[in-house]
Structure formats: C-alpha cells, structure tokens
Image (cartoon, rainbow, N blue to C red):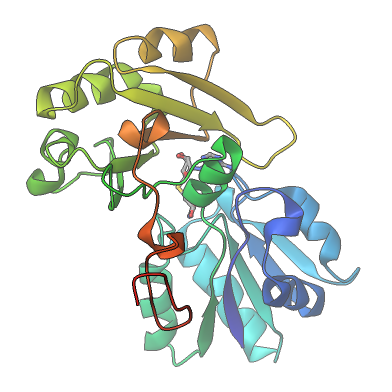
Length: 252
Ligand code: SAH
C-alpha cells in the first residue's frame, strides 16, 4: 500500500495524527527534501528506508515505490503542506494507477493556512473579502492567461501567492496594474511554523524593498488584501440578534 501524505508546513506537530501514524509504520519513506522538515523522519522505524526525492526523477520515485510494493512493503510519499497544492502528485497517482498500485491520499495543513496562523489573521472578513485566491506568479511553470496575477487582482479578494517571493517586484507591479491600490497591505511569511519563521509587512508600494532588505528569496507566502488592516463588519454568526439552527437570537 502507498500513502501520499501531507507533511504540513514545517512544525512536526502540524502533521495529522494519521500522517504521523503512517510515518511510524512505513517501510519506505520518500520525502520532498527541499521543503519537508527532516525532523518528521524521526518518527520512522530504525529499519525504514528513507529517500529524498529532491534528487530523484518522477521515474525513479515510481520505480522505488513499485519495488517496495513487489516486496509487500508500505510506502509513505511525504509532501510538504497539503499534497493537492503544487504537489505534482497527479502524475504520480496516474502512473501508480496504470501499474495497478493502490494508494490513499492523507491531507495536510497547507502553508497558506500556517501563514494565517503566523499572522494571527482571518482571511475572510465580512464586507472586506469572502474569497481567498490561491495562486502563483508565472515562472518556469506556465500560468493560464485568464489566471495571470493582473486578472486575479481585479477581484481585490484576499490572495495567497505561492512560489513567487523571488519575483516580488513583478508580483507587485501586476497587482497594482490589475487594480489593487498602492496602499493595499501585504505580508510575507517565510518558513511559517518553523523555528526560523520570519514575518515582514508593508504596502504594495513598499514591500519589494522590505523583502530585499530582509533577504527573503524562497519558502515564503505572500498575502495581499484589505483584510490585513481594516475596519470590518463583525460576523453575523455571533451577533445577539441573529438566529440560526443552533441558537435562538433576540430577533425571534
Ligand atoms: N503543498 C505545499 C506547497 C508546495 S509549493 C503547501 O500546501 O503548502 C512550495 C511553496 O509553498 C513555497 O514556494 C512557498 O510559497 C510555500 N511554502 C511552503 N512551506 C511554507 C512555509 N512553511 N511558510 C511559507 N510558505 C511556504
């Protein structure tokens, strides 16, 4: 059996209980070494075979899993955050299916949520934004035309931008061209939930310089939107005059 497991954003306690159990039981672990916290490998049995996929091709990953399967071993394929977000797992799953190898996906805490926790910030504030856009700037991986940052910026929703901090000047330029005001607040969290976590804040106008001054060039989340500093309407859910299925309000 193969488990594709979300490792969480870095803090080894932010893996799910199920993910931790599977790491303890695994005969083979293949982890995404560029981002997964190696401290998670401490959960492995002493005899567990451990591979860092950072230096492997897709073919080598699949061959390693296939060989383990043939020996009746259990494999954990450990991906950072949640595997469904920029995890490149679809091609692995399709290849496993072609080989009739069964697999299960175990979700994880994505880094955009660990970033919200680090910022102590709700992304969905009433009357400010009720939408979170998860995206990235175009790099070596192309982004479909309709999803360019400039187009997405027209919504002025809360945006969580992955994989792009090294292109911060270009990101900011597109966001402003797309419609965000220059004074819109923006925050960058590097290595959210790791001991070396770093937070910087600014506006679209100031952030590029702040990022450079702080030498932040990788493993960082960009969050932009008015939610980061504004007056907002309180949620109706906890308002005294609001009735719902579980509470009788003063409106009734
Ligand atoms: N599947 C992962 C994302 C992998 S893509 C997830 O769900 O989080 C890698 C990008 O994720 C990085 O370039 C960075 O933008 C972001 N990232 C991963 N870990 C992070 C962390 N601890 N703090 C901030 N951003 C992180």
